[in-house]
Image 1 (spheres, rainbow, N blue to C red):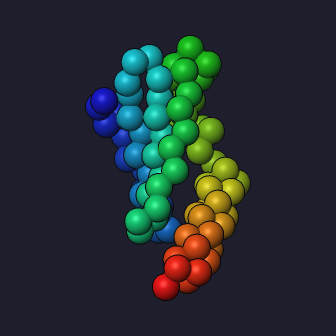
Image 2: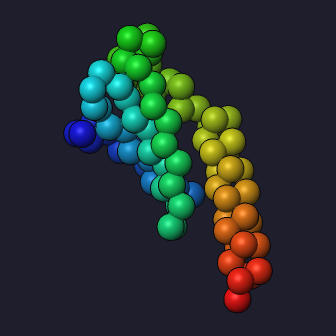
Length: 81
């Protein structure tokens, strides 16, 4: 797996990797991470097409999922403390 790009964002780290004819888009926020895999043939324009897909609306959805993930793990952790 090789790093193709990193996109700056104030609320999370965004990395794009290439592996086995797939783009892997990884979002990291603290100890949490989300990854999305896209076949290279499904993305028009290659890596530039990936950049276009990562608009602010999509990133806000990812950040919302991080909030849900964090809430779920905190709730579970608190049950067993």
